[in-house]
Image (cartoon, rainbow, N blue to C red; front, side, top):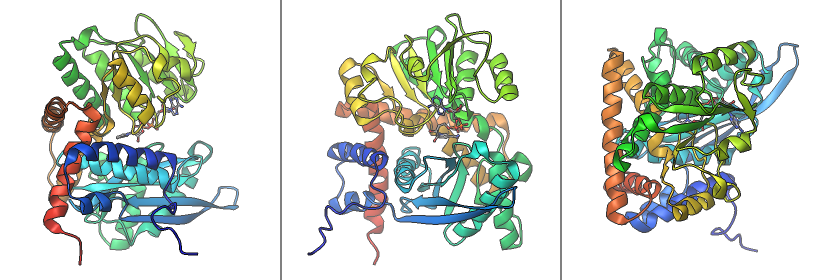
Length: 425
Ligand code: NAD
């Protein structure tokens, strides 16, 4: 029997990839691009599956599945995070790679999207084990990554140290230091000041822009932040720095709540000492599900994907939602928020501060010339404000949601380049 190519499931067809694709299809109706471009963009250009052998500290060997997906190279090299998590899959990487393409295009950064990961439990691994795993993964990917090909960055459970191991491994093979192979690395080896804070700070720049448009004062907003890691932790501090109240934050262990506002510095030192928010004595403890449903003005989703769904969107009690994480709101939840008149500041705009300063880091590395904190913060604010204005304008012009407007702007950007370049050969 002939294989039905049209309807055969592809390896990356998972619920998260279907969600990314469904958002793409929704936006296509307004994007007005050629069919061949749309068809090409439904597929990642390259999806690599690896098995990564890791010698554990007790001498035994484990082999872990690893992935790297590159969605589009139309605008330049691909760029995207590397995550260590038990749920990493090819489909998850493919969805996140597609979102990265849109994010870079929306910000007018000359990159396409990529994402990678290793399916592991990083919390159960020692630093030495993580180092061996990272170095082996880097070597396995050597043929497809590079400063002009694909540039990794930190994501869930990876950090500046992980990037330093990748940079060192790659540089050893090349025979000279290649800082531009990764971004989000330590400043001592070519990292950029303000990279670590960029995503969380960008989230608050976008929130501030939206508050201005709605005529709200950011200093009067009561906020809940899901996720107290790199993005959520910085976003919470930036909100407080702007005078807003952060009433609740959460991490994988659950949430903490204080009506009058949390002491973030104390929370941070608690987490540093104890590993999570669990047991923090100065606030009320609530479950992860309850955190999302607390009455507030602004709910910042900065943990992981698939958090607000058709099941709980009706119970969210916020005036506005800001997506610091990638893909935290499902298509069904989006429809419910549209009906309820709750604006969602979409991930590809709201958390784009990270990739923007990653791009600045890469440019600085290539030029061997480094900029200061204030200059980078100002350049980031300019880029985000420009993208925000274009999204808002398109959203009003076409009467579509900010998510659809952000996707339309991004898809048009990629489509313009693809139409000019054509399909090889
Ligand atoms: P991180 O590992 O530093 O922090 C993640 C936080 O979420 C941790 O506090 C963790 O405990 C918490 N968490 C995990 N599961 C949870 C759950 N079920 N409920 C509540 N909290 C939970 O990761 P990060 O770098 O802050 O990334 C967070 C999100 O932001 C991810 O979706 C990532 O893809 C996205 N993002 C990150 C960056 C960046 O620069 N780091 C840039 C763009 C997007």
